[in-house]
Image (cartoon, rainbow, N blue to C red; front, side, top):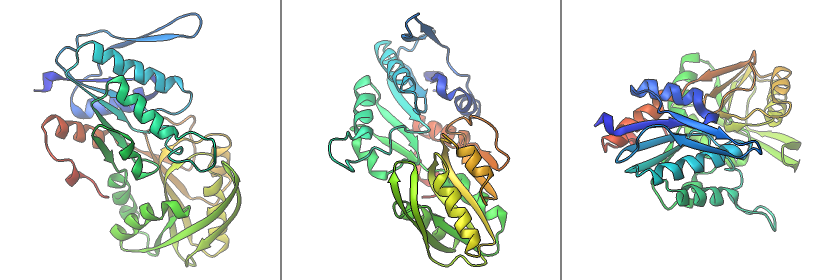
Length: 310
């Protein structure tokens, strides 16, 4: 049965894909990317795919070439007569565009879902979507994994005496509530107002954090502006310590500088995206085993729900 499985990776996710393949017990398949002088590129599978169950791993952050490479690989696998194609996106790019928040803008997440399905994927596996309803954008099965599976045990091992979970905004309150429930602690919410994307105007804290050890929980960290401001405000408001748990380390712009100069004691992320540089306060936990175990269960037609803390 294992011989029928092949795992491949796009160029943007080679590090985590290698870890997933090792955890599963297989080597990554051979893919060659041919580049033309004008910038066009063409992926090529250098081994037979006929009748095989193919897992293609690729996170899709900017630039858009990462998404295009992913789509081309799915199309190539379909045309090579693969029996089944499972598209694995540790990080689903464009997920913040899950609705029309103002006139004359696209719903980017829906468009990406259509493109992946049209390219030939039979199933999607991803982790900590920005909004749960994105699963409904796909017409094929979606396995939505949760990094809480590794984050919650990590927080427990910290043995913080006065733990409180914080949501960085109203939208993340559901996620934070899951953590608070499993950790049997209180939850607070940060209320923020934006001037524009990635620029925070005002931020307020709803709840008691005095003499508390705060852990901010979010699905992604981009410029880290909200996190830095929230942590500094929490410290000024009497918090003992402030940590942050974020699944996807986008870390663009002045993110590393913001983190280093803030009151954040530690930022814990996964390896769904490779870090652009090292940070003294940044700790990476791998989700490779989580994905590898899910691949095994899918291959054996077993349930995956019992593995995850949701």
